[in-house]
Length: 240
Image 1 (cartoon, rainbow, N blue to C red):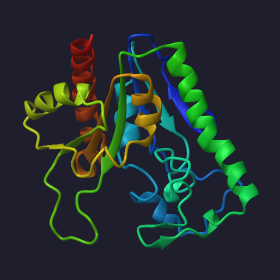
Image 2: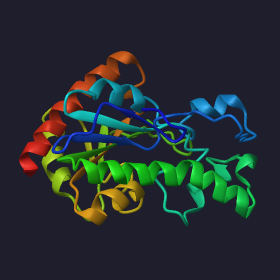
Image 3: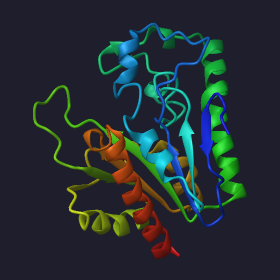
């Protein structure tokens, strides 16, 4: 299923795994002019690099994927409604003039994308409660403001509910990975979608951030897809 706001790959199964990737696309729909150079759409400010390739390869009999179908610059689905970055006017120092909207324009944008994405996601979760929601993101190998590379291959993020995180961290470490517990940033701060659809309803979830250089090509995406499908199944089974 493909809509303006999201792509649904596979069929969500009760007791299965649902991947949710809020930043899986750099698409700018017809009728939306962000007023930026096209080159910026290939950067992390527009898309979580590599995430769509991992998610697509994970889809199977009991794994479905809910993927954003617009760039986070069009609408950042992993934000609360009152967050400044929901329709970012500035991102990483780059002005986004097409996001300076009147109240009516803002309401139309949110109805077309934000509300459609989240309302339909919740409806699917109610219809087929998963054993585990897998929230999938990626992060940059280094910050533009710092020359020191980030050492973590993968980060595990959560807010109040750390049930899945506590199971997943040793499993990831057993793969020989450098794992960040609430690193490179904290799920206490950046967890809007999981707060809304998982924590608010007691649904188990695993929030993962993979370093982009790990999944920037097909080989890396295939490796991580196999790894995360296996680990998600282990986590889901342990939570039952």
